[in-house]
Length: 305
Image (cartoon, rainbow, N blue to C red):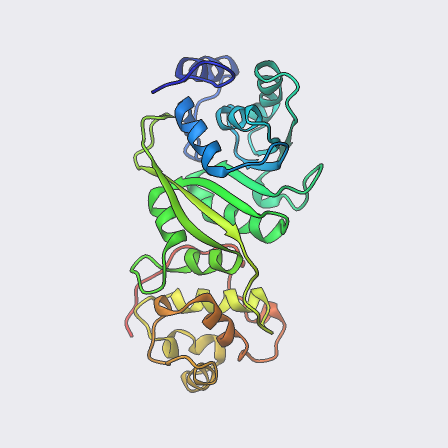
């Protein structure tokens, strides 16, 4: 299955490059380096990139996926947090794909607010497991030019992002992703194509940008309602949103005005319904109704009704 021909890096080359750089994969940065050429090309094909398309990649690592992207003719800007890897990847690309259109930004992806060159229209990345959802939502928020996203994440996370209302895994990542885009699972990736092999399977999730719900509420207000609704999954919306609206009675009034059953639970609602609920919030600045950073928050606690 391994394809070490052409520009792509194989297992031995990955280990050799890491050894020469003194790089040891760390759990802190969520580093699992992809080394299988067949998997790289599968990701590139699934992304459906156009020749010359500007693509942003987050966490390129040693450059396995990066090489696949530039080999396919993409114009790539990569965001890398590790200074050693960021310093090496331009040389790797230049050596293996001469003339490639590539540049690297040394930064934490969560801190990036602007990118050099043309605005990217696609995000293709093997996202670190520990920050996958915040990075995905932050990139969708900050770069409105992104039309399509294909990211490899932990399989469980991919399922949560693509989940539909009414399913047990539908939650904060599902609703917030739906604000920006439609999402679907796009394939499963085994463990043995990485070094070191992770303890869980990975999956591809494909998102296609769409307009957010038509609403008078701000995104921050809608996301505040979403966070509150899922803070304790077993609570009814009347109980879960009592803190946001000031009391259970006020929450029930707001829910009925939004056309939502106060006895329903958050996992049954689509993003448009959350937007209608947010329209009923008191007329306060966004900072007074948001409890968490809009792009954060994936943990959902259990609680009694």
